[in-house]
Length: 88
Length: 423
Image 1 (tube, each protein chain N blue to C red):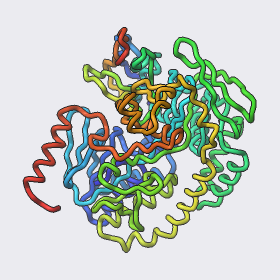
Image 2: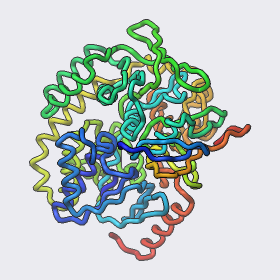
Image 3: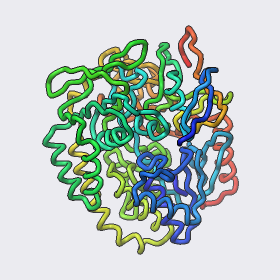
Image 4: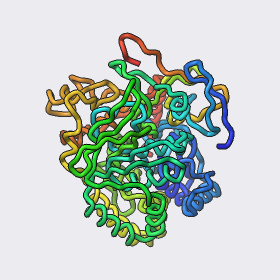
């Protein structure tokens, strides 16, 4: 895990250690993974694929779990957009 | 077919393969190891026991299916979803080694960013999360807290405190059992060295996590009767473990006291289905390995090879019982959640809304609690403690999946039904 690889979180470039998961990339970027029903930012809780708080869109595919997906160079990670109606 | 590539699953798959059975091992993580051996296959700090098991896995003929999440099984076919498709694997015997997950007890502020499970925080640290010089409070209950604190300290974090809800006496009694369980002395010794400078508070539990702009700033705790606040960057909080019994239940396996009931050869009440590791009892690494081996040998028709392991298994089951007693949850933890605390994170259902109902089913139907993506895994475990509710046996798909995957499940059922085979 010595080298860093570049990914993009919500359009912004971020460097993460090789072998990191997408959930980690979100933390490094300081980005929430989703917005709750009432509009609160949420991020990973369980780290093991059961809570589904870390679900994000990866390379255009929605609802992928960040904690179980390894980062790849150039990966596009986007958290669901905040909307007035809240749900993400 | 072994579901789950943690220690129990690895031991089961290897043992079955060595007994001449065609074995496959499926897991939703990108690489084997489960939680305790996460990313351990190629790490320098891996224990010799883990390294040996990974080597055995590499050197046997086990078929590896990683990055695939099992969401159902029907008529001798397991269905698993991967990033780009569905895997359907026919099996004669199924060994379920689905492990355990942390129990989360809601408290005000538990949904803030940087409040994670204890195991959750460790999982992210093992997956690249920078923890160097970060101030971290570990809270909740269970031996996992100590292991996580030790790991984080060893990786340069500043673990400010470990807040264990059990009493000092109970913890000391557990330590006695740990030192007397075979093989655990070295582990216990290394652990205590890593956390020798970390304050370990007993009779202590989280009261609230406070923050600014959605980011954690402080954890408020009840420390032996007094309220204190600790500034920190991360909170790792979990209240021991609950078994992942969803897949076994959906396949008709009977439970006993909330765990999958198994006979001496790890066979469940459902034909051709075995279960090994944490879903049968929260017992830790050594017991998981033993149960995995016994299940693997038994499923491959080599019960004779399994017999010599019974004695050790019995010893570790005694250790498991000691662990359950030591870390039982004190009733005051039921009052951590306030009326406006979210219990169901997926659907934002607060405690006061849940109090309007007197059963899990009623609450689910009226509030959507448990209808979100986690399918009640997080809120259900909490409500089992808070209200005594049982979430009932789930139906496939036991994880959210794409429509195409559900279609595959249905067509597999039709396929085997039309063949009319009784395998």
